[in-house]
Amino acid sequence: MEGVDVSKASLFVSDHLHMVTKLRPFVRTFLKEARRMFNTYVYTMNESYASEMVDLLDPRSNYFSEKILQDNSTQKNLDFLSGKSSTAILIFSDAENVWPEHKDNLILMQRYLFFAASCRQFHYKIKSLAEMKEDESELDGVLAAILKVLRQIHTKFFRESGDDDHASRDVRQEKKFLVNPWWLEAAVFLWQRQPEQKFPVNVLKRCKIVFSGVFPSNFRAGSHRLWKMAKQFGATCSKEFVRSVTHVVSADFTTVESYRALNENKFLVNQRWLEDTNILWRRQPEKMFPVNILKGCKIVLSGFILTNNEIDVLWNMAEQLGAKCFTSFCASVTHVVSENPTAKVVGWARKRKAFLVRPRWIEDAKSSWIKQPEEDYLVP
Image (cartoon, rainbow, N blue to C red; front, top):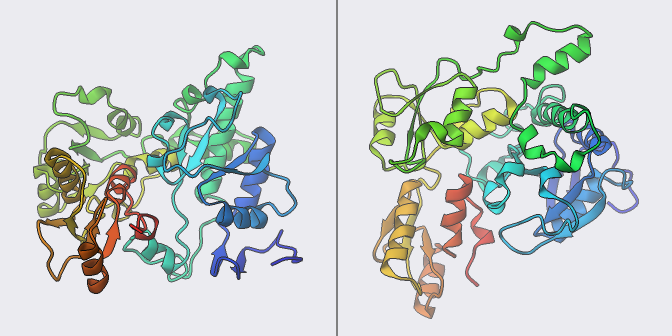
């Protein structure tokens, strides 16, 4: 792609990465408008891939304050921005699990599943946009919705303070007090205040939700962020599975509530269904957020320097995500999870063409609610 003007194109073939890339609709407008309000950075574990993507997104170096900030660790923090307070930083990421210390700064992004290969890579059992011969809308797609939210946050942070003491303000707090961004956009576009009822905040009205395995049984459910989030969007929350329940938000596929949801034709979703609704101010398709993200995976745990209790935790975690675990090798095993495999275990996995992955593969799937690409967790 050297020497080619990429500033207006959206589909690219990378000889270096051996892949085809499609840019998300509205992305350059999003970056242009975001740059007017914020300093923007790219933070990555894979500099080679990120560098090529930045060259496509920002060929004239207009948008990003620095080209690439790299960190090879699997968990990220904001230390790379020395001298910057976390109270003035927003993070965009599709992986909540890599930001354990900064979830209040995080705005979760939906993945852009244009190619069928992307659906397979991230184990979404849905048709890709290309297969449906569709694409995201520039006017009301994911990036357009988030840009509206960014404008609200920026306005609240800088213009509504009434003083110049921005150092005392906290962007994480401004993120919590927003109106439906589509109402704000319509008012600006039409230059007239619009009826709020046409742009409801209660996008989960008529949803009755019970939570299962999401927080401890002795926890005050009403004070949990997901409970508050559901209520904010008009849902009714229940501590018990009653006949009128429409949704079970579960962290464990093996709970009684999860089984009842399946047997009684209720929606069974993971917590990202609520979190993505929170991002986009629209009820999200439930089928995109399954609890059993490791369905079809048959796992053997082998070669650990762990206590029996720690192995049990990992075993339970895999089963909570819909996997089946075995105590010994059998022909149907698809994954061998190991820290320190013997030569015999390595040979068996290769012979059976089973994935040989680190325990982190299960842990990251649990924390992100996305089945992670095995290639990123392979045992050498």
